[in-house]
Length: 93
Image 1 (cartoon, helix red, strand yellow):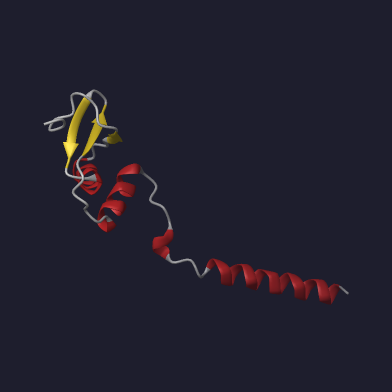
Image 2: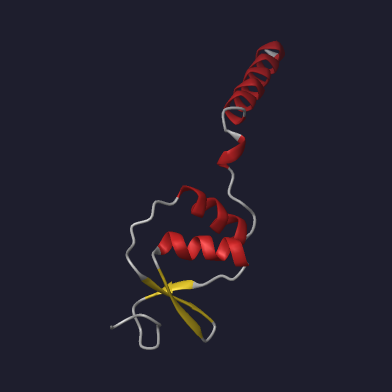
């Protein structure tokens, strides 16, 4: 009986290790927002639909969401996509 229990624990350990080894290294989520934005910007496909972004009181218009992600990655300034609002440059013209 003890031999049966030991064999089951060994098989369970091998099963857990084999499942964990199937995850690729790149499947993990970056630890901070800038790294996440850079990762998203690398795979983003531009659709050229202008969006308004806001960081604190500063507002600016971006070419599209990919442009906003690239800007965050390049400058370490995280703008948040907001619905069209008054004061966003280039909007409503």
